[in-house]
Image (cartoon, rainbow, N blue to C red; front, side, top):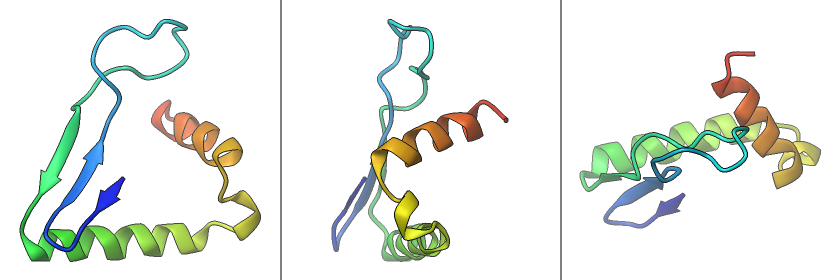
Length: 74
């Protein structure tokens, strides 16, 4: 994720099949917002969600598997 004062961008996985069939490899390459209302809303929603996660669970080793479980509907 990248956030700037004039825009917010969220990058996704590239399209196509995944080499290991375990990771999601579809969807948009990026979503780009330029209006200030969307940028601020995105930032506040992200920070609110991030603050709910206990500090010890804010590293890659925890976050990535958790997001994959959520996307799989588990």
